[in-house]
Image (cartoon, rainbow, N blue to C red; front, top):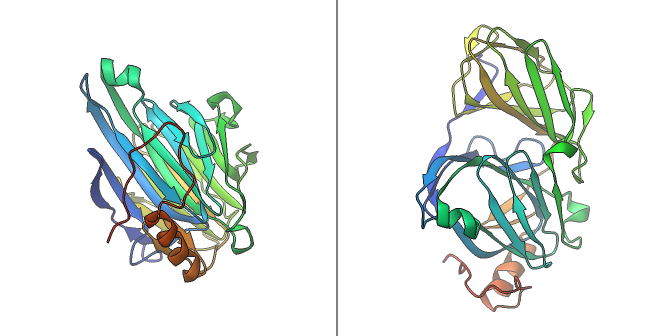
Amino acid sequence: MSDYLLIQPRRETIASQQILRPLPSARCRSVGPFVFFDHILPQHYPAGTGMTIDQHPHIGLSTLTYLFEGQLQHKDSLGSDQLVGPGEVSWMTAGNGVAHVERTPAALQQSGSRLHGLQVWLALPAAQEQCAPAYSHHPAASLPRSSALGVEVCLIAGSGFCLQSPVPVHSPCVYAEIRLAAGATLQIPAEHAERALYLLDGEVELEDEKLPPEAMLVLPEGATPTLAACSESHLVLIGGEPIGARRMDWNFVASDPALIDQARQRWAARDWPQVPGETRRIELPR
């Protein structure tokens, strides 16, 4: 796989939750519009505990949260208050400025729970970076799926594998969850210029070489490699059209550094839309 770029993720802890983060990296700043990729590692929260990420801001991007286990409560400065469960899409477009909170719901904090999932950020096209913020929730039943010969595909966002997701993305992309039965094969189509695979679980060969688990493999443009599952396996495919150069600073993404500077000044000055009912916030890093 000499033509493939392998990105080993960084391990970090956010609000007591362990994550792996392959994007962004020094070797790869983006894959299509995807500028940030967090694997929220499987974690058990005993009764009386949970994850809470206090109020924080975003500009210039859309966030997409997709869980395999557990629930999160999403609240934002638009007034949204949504429980997000396994297989559902929580989609928030920050545009010119939004704040939000993510936490384990109160009921699960009392009973104890598990959490496992993914959160990605997609940079907005330059012409839409300053659009009005928006939020939408998409139930699992609304996402298109295909199943044949031991291959199950759920299209989380974008288009691919002859499927189209209802999530209102702002540029051409693909974000697909793929499950393979042992012995199943799948050719990855060259439907988008930039693509990458991330193996969550199982054992998969790509062109007769093992795909490293919990690492991101960026595919060459135009390549149509074949996946072969040696065991029951679970992975995701991301990609899309190149988004162009972006600057990322904390939770802010922009093509113009001046927009980042303005956002930092506004958050520091508390000149920002607030999440109703929330008082705690994450202060600007120095």
